[in-house]
Image (cartoon, rainbow, N blue to C red; front, side, top):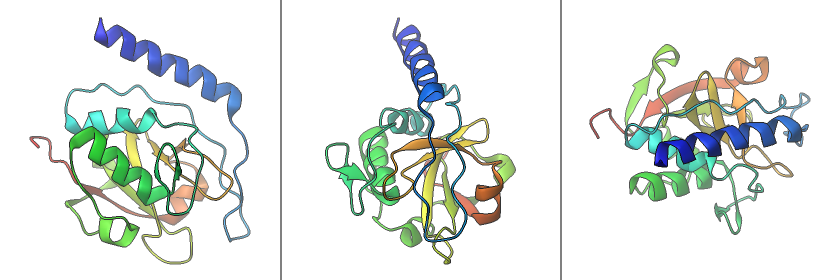
Length: 173
């Protein structure tokens, strides 16, 4: 019964997101971020997948610099810290550079739900972080005026800014 409820929630979120995708606020560069992607199906078979599902529960939460909770809003590292604390019981650093030093490096072709993906969005490496969901999609808190949303790793915008990925939760952890 719990699996049925989870699949219903994911399907419902996918329908809502499909009708609500909008252009996000521009980053301090000349190129806008791409439109939000659809939500992938995530099977919560381990802690890392549970983190991905925990992140999906916060879709639509407003972006806020320094934000650490659904009540106050999230910035990118605040979303990651909150989701890993609530979904896996892990306390992670609150800045993207320190997050980029955790766990083990993961090749893009080997990404699994719950892995951290890093981007250069402020003309410095590891200035932005998201959580990989599967199916070439990740979730993040994008920028001022935006809200937590799903993006495609295949979008030209994100491909050009990709810095790498880290696995904080090992398959047996």
